Amino acid sequence: MRPAARLVSLAALVATIVPPVLYFYGHMDLDATKAWMLVATIAWFVATPIWMDR
Amino acid sequence: MADDTRVPTTEPVDEYEREPVPERAWLGFTSFVGQYAGEHTAGTELMIGPLFIASGVSAVDVVGGLFVGNLLAVLSWIFLTAPIAVRARMTLYFQLEKICGRRLVTAYNLANGIMFCFLAGAMVTVNATAAGVWFHFAMPGLNDLYPNSPGWVVAVLVMGTLITIVAAYGYKVVARIANIAAPWMVLVFVAYGIVGARQLGIDSIGEFWTKAQELIWTGGAPLAGRAKFTFWHVMFFAWFCNMAMHIGMADLSVFRYARKSWYAVGTAAGMYLGHFIAWLAASILYAQQLHAMPGNTDVLPGPLAYNSTGVAGLICVIVAGWTTANPTIYRAGLAFQAIAPSSSRYRVTLITGAIATLAGMFPAIAMKLLDFVALYGLVLMPMGAVIFVDFWLAKRLGFRDRYAERTGVGINWAAGLTWALTLAGCLAVVKMGGLEIYFVGLPGWFAAATLYVVLSRWIQRKEART
Image (cartoon, rainbow over the protein chains, first blue to last red):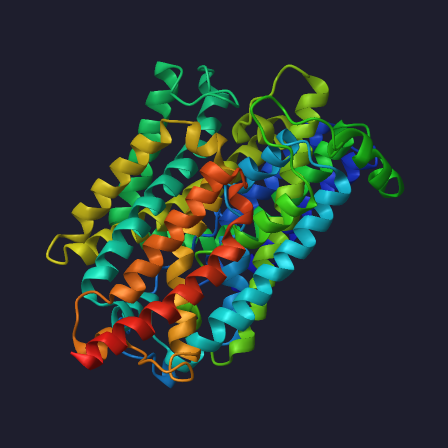
């Protein structure tokens, strides 16, 4: 469970920062960027408490 | 900062309050990297970055000033705070009590608690701007001093009440959320800058610096009511915004757990993530707002974040504000409780939170955050000079260290007068001499150190003769 949660957390961090970078270079629009960041945020706060600080 | 205005987001350390930290409790280097990185990415960073833009700073001055100022802050922790912390391994308060006496430490606690309350108030203000995005009430402008709408008052009241109740009853939960949120928060702050830059029309790294000088940090005239900022303003602000913690020695309480004094290098994580990247990113958001709506000079972290990164950005504002206001209120409560030890910690925290909430209704503190943070450091700085001189120089300069402990006095007047005279002198120079508050801290430290030596020698000699 914990290794899987760690993977999800890592993916969430990537999904937090990659959409703004894609938006910066014109490969994603702003609404999609915001939506991906929200999904990543939810994933981070669901997965990370499972393995961090326990 | 908090702040900024630096404020811990981890659980306040309240063990070994009256004894040196034993070796079994010492911590490794990474503990300090994580703690400082989290602490210095606070909600108030979203106020400070825009206020640099409002002060008409140029790109070279802001980047250079932040780089050098943050380096000086890190060096202050490394060479001033940590060496004493790992040798004495005592809290600031216990060390001060040995030098200054119980009654003087009580006065110090009162000053510290009041400043913490106002700082927490600014954090509540930041959080309330996030509520404004959803509920569309009128929010304060850049130069507003008083609450300007019933909706604003209600938002601050609700946010402040929630934060206070949690600080009193659920502290550990929020401390854990703070630790969990830290890596994500840092990335969202970076995202603010990236998205803001693109919204300004910058679409390649190569042209960033050129366009940054034209569109972001233009070095033009400051906005109405703001002082013009130069390299020196930025550098001294970055160095001294945490003055209470390094030069003022408050972080003796943190680094007494460090195995080695060089672990203070870990403060660089907080300085360069929070006080460099986060401030620059927040200022990009504000520049974008001024570019899109030239008449809109409001510094409102909620709308700024929402317009760039949507709900995720807004959640970041709330989490960053909440997780830093929480320990600030808690620590203010601890400072007040030290004055009245018999009072319940919960009741003191609730009262402290109520004061912070009331302060948060007045946007003057948040909108003048640069000045407030400078004042906060200045108020606590003289006692840092007293500790430094007492620890390293007292015996060499011919007076007794830890005077209160050795003599049992309630007030070491050499320390008390050093504090009062230094502060009065610095504020007089600011008010009557026209020198800005950012510049008095450095000469003030030397003045405090000199005063403490002269007064200690004079008072101790006088007592030896009688």
